[in-house]
Amino acid sequence: MSNLTANLTALQLHVAFWDLNNDSYVDTPHDPNIITPYEIYTGFRALGFSILFSLGGLLIPVFFSYPTTLGHSWLPDPLFRIYTSYIHKAKHGSDTGIYDSDGHLRLALFNEMFDKMDSSSAEHEGQREGSLGVGDLFRLHGRNRVAADPAGWSFAAMEWWTTWLLLQREGRLWKDDLREMYDGTLFWKIRERQLERRGDTIQGYGWKDWVGTMWHNGTWKSWEIEDNRDVGRDRTLESPMSSLVVQDDGLGFLEAYNGTCSVHKIE
Image (cartoon, rainbow, N blue to C red; front, side, top):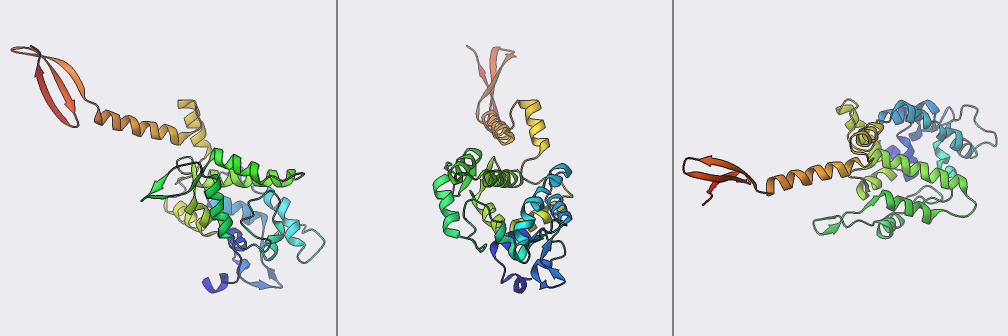
């Protein structure tokens, strides 16, 4: 497979996950590198998205089939298929520019996005890990918007929303995950994990997270609830607990701290 993908651009690799019969890797007159609407629906389901959301994913061929068809015809494809050989023609305005006009990945712009937009201070082994929160994504979307481009604004918003739903951990999109998302390798990893877990959600954010945290805690930020629980557990372990006890020789109080107990007599 590596020999077959050697000549593909990062953007072609990004969308190749949705090509169920792998015709993106072989260009023939009878099988011209296409992704069908059915493959798009099936791909989203394989990533763990709900039926309703996956049906919403069918907006992708509605909007992006014709631009990719322009690589070989002025006539639209009546089956709304996407031609991956010309996927770069489906690039829209108001995006990050991380893919160039040919679909190649611009790593310098990718790194710059985190340098400018990452508002966190998360570090690992003394180095900044790199992540984007919801507020960072709103600022990024606002920065990239160009005049008179409502279609580009909408497409960019939908793409970041979908990415966040799929990849968020602790309320943030992490740099390593996004890097693998841009070249498509992360989709295959998520699919394998989904198969191992038999469809259980392994990360991301779904309607169960929203309903559960809104119903029980009045907030949609499920990761903050988990953090508060962890802090509460830590405080319980670290804080001393005491209670009044009656002894034969008088009153005292029992103190428990970090797994040890001791009785102090009240004079």
